[in-house]
Amino acid sequence: MSNTKAKTKIETAFAKREEYEIENKASDNKFRELNKAKNAFMHESVQAFIDAENFDMSFLNTQTNKASRFSVKAALKVANIMHAIAAKKADLLDNHTRTIIEQFAHLADKKRAYDYNELKSMQSASVTTSLSTSLNQDKRKAYDVATLSTQTSSTMQALRVLDLTERDTNEKRKHERVKFSDKRLAFMFK
Image (cartoon, rainbow, N blue to C red; front, side, top):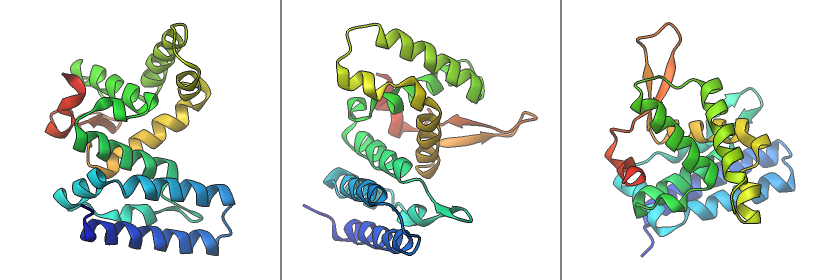
């Protein structure tokens, strides 16, 4: 059964975003991406998550700089992570997102802060190893090393929006850690 409150939040946020994109003469591709993200948010389990967490959909229209809003690709990851959390199934996440979260867990286990260059290096090694195995063509495309920087960035944006990262202020540079003590992510590490 569809939840009217969550559905209204989703429709309102996406309508506002579409207005912004129309005003800024966005490409047809941008509108296809928006529609794909909206459909992901309309999934029943995602709507249930939105209600259970009293999740604020206004993130979608957050201004990131003078000329842009929150990444639509990151918004899709938000919906996908919500879906995976609600279903308690890591396999609902795309390969990059799942691998990035696993790499964060690895760093967190070592009590080390998130370091983008180290994560990128670990990710490249993991991706190269995975590609040399018998992955099907779709997974190879999803694991394209060339998209690593964008995938990592959009995953971090999604994790921030879901309040699954925390700032480590004990060091000179401010780092982010994924909150693996958060019980919502426990299903990932069974």
